[in-house]
Figure 1 (cartoon, each protein chain N blue to C red):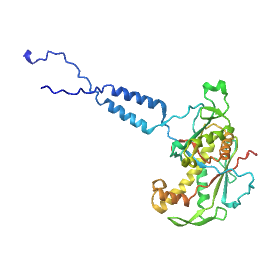
Figure 2: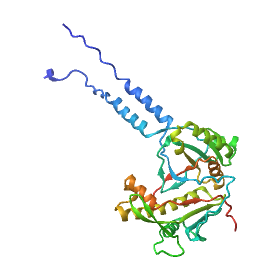
Figure 3: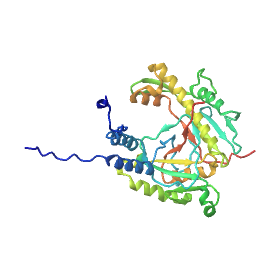
Amino acid sequence: MAKFINTEKKEVPPINTASLPDIVFMVLMFFMVSVSMRQTDKLVTLTLPQASEVAKLERKDLASYIYIGTPERRLQNQYGTETRIQLNDSFKTTDDIKDFVASERESLSEADRSFMTVSIKADENTRMGIITDVKQALRRCSALKIMYAARKSAAK
Amino acid sequence: MAHKKTPAINGGSMADISFLMLVFFLMVTTMDSETGLQRRLPPMPQENQKTEDTKVNRRNIILVKVNSNDRVFAGDQPIDDVSQLEPKIVEFLTNPNNLETLPEKETQNIEGYGPCQISKGVISLQNDRGTSYSKYIEVQNALVKAINTIRDQFALANYGKKYAQLDEDKQKIVRDCVPQNISEAEPKDVNKK
């Protein structure tokens, strides 16, 4: 009977990993399609307000962002805890919005300029005063298409 | 004669490479979709242009105020809860009983639809410098919700579908028939007590 007994040590067959690249590529493709490039580093703490009737921004490439909120904790030594406006990568004042809008507009192609949207990302605890100032500054440089960024909430 | 085979390319590192790319994409991108309430600001009046008040009939305007204590007023009546604002706006804009005190309607020819009664009502939203942003958005949201309700009603009555399910052309018709007239007034201190 010894003839039939397999004398070799029984090993667990190795898992075939040939399909692993395919799977990872699939995940990669999903991420490439569904995400957008991070443009700026956020320097303010942001909790966007909730709204149920939000609309999606169709052309993300035409949007420029104005962040309004209190500086992040690590920056509070330097910048204090007052609500600040962040344009690109630094804190600015409402006077700088004009230059900001001008440069953002410059970076778009001629045909797209009229579709530029300014997305105001403000913390929900911000007071309206500073937002009104921003809005007035935007009106002055005729960037009239704006969006109040908000999180989608379940309809009440 | 032995046939010389080209050696198979070792694909074992393919997974590593694509993992590397995956990690790169995870790091440099954001996933949050951009959502929000879209608005169009009124253009700044020219300096040499006289700020003439466009005479809007008293009955055609509803003032929605939010004061610095986040109290909401609609047409001088206090609103305790923002959810009460929506039916009020719907009533204001549709004027179902053609009341004298609510906005008048104007018959306009809408392309692709025909004559349509369009309300001339304007919602004027005023806020104080001390109003909190979350309250402001909540009120804005309630106003949009009211308009969306009317659009849905209109779409259901005419096309048997909700506004969001209509195709582009019909959505435009509905948008023309039920315009979104929210005016964000010049900033003003409404903090008079």
